[in-house]
Every structure is written in structure tokens, then in C-alpha cells.
Image (cartoon, rainbow, N blue to C red; front, side):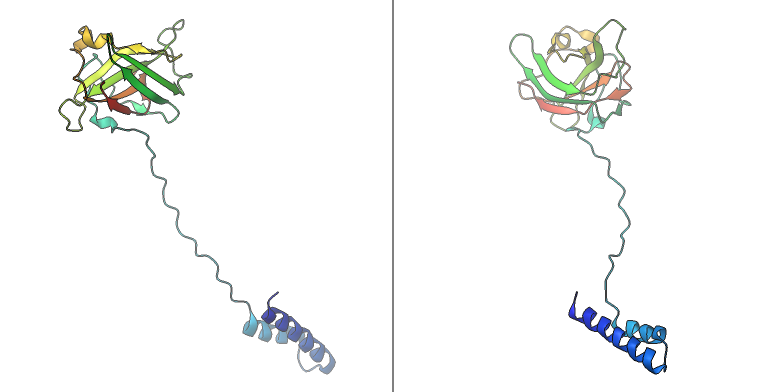
Length: 193
């Protein structure tokens, strides 16, 4: 206890005893006077209004910058599913380029057919003029729930308007969607080897 509190308690007890013996005032009146003069000065924190949470995004490229010009499908309205994550995405060149990746959160996505292991669609985009818009891209392969590497040969065999691989050093962005193109993962990026 602080000295002022000890003093106040002692004073109250002395006044109470005096009042009880003399009968000149009530303990309640003396207590009120003493309390109003010696009440502790405690500053309570002023509550501040909560800030609304900001929408966290783990997209390395803004999803709206991906232009669906290849692959025969436009999934630009796919909604981000926070638990659906791709990571460690890399492309190996030499011969047929191959995409390697890991991920999580696709186990509950519907399969293409009940007996298949296909749960998602790979979509890749290229920013060939360096303006931040990934103008050449779209669907190029079905993805498997077991995250096997994906040979990228469809890009070179005129698969639904695909017309070859980009030049070395071209920025790329990749995203996966569910088999209906309604839900999507995060967007990752890299540079063509």
C-alpha cells in the first residue's frame, strides 16, 4: 500500500472512533468527506474503437492482372480460398519444361471424376512486355491431389490457343483453381529459366 492510502485508512479509523465516542456526526458523513478528499487518482484506459480487420492476401501478383487469353477457360471470377495454398513453385527448363510444387488445402475440393485424382487446374501467365500485366496465359493442365510435377508440354502443342514457351527471363505468375474454376489458391510468381 502507498503511504497516502495507509494515512487515509488510519484517519478514517480515528474519525470513526471519535465520532462514535462524541456522537457529533455519523461515521458515514465523515467517511464521505474523507473519501472525496483522498480518493485514489486512477486513470482508466480510454477504449478506442476497433479497426476493422484488413483482408490479408498472400498473392504475389494481383489476381486481376492475370489475363485469361489461353486455355479455353476464363476463371477470372474465382474466389480466393484462404486454406488453399501453393508454394515452392519452380519451373525446370531443358527438354520439356516441368513445373514442381507443394501445397495444401485441396483435399476437400471436388475431383474431376469420382475415380480420378484430379482436384485442380494449373493456370500460368506471362508478362512478356514487363508492364505488370500478365497478358498471355490461362489453363494448361489438370493438377493432381498428390502434387506430382507437371510437364508443361501443352503450352507448346497448340493446346487451346497456347502458342509456345516464353523467352528466358520472362516473368510468370501461376495460380490453381478447382475443377470448376470457382475457387482459387494464392498467386505465385517467378522468372522463366
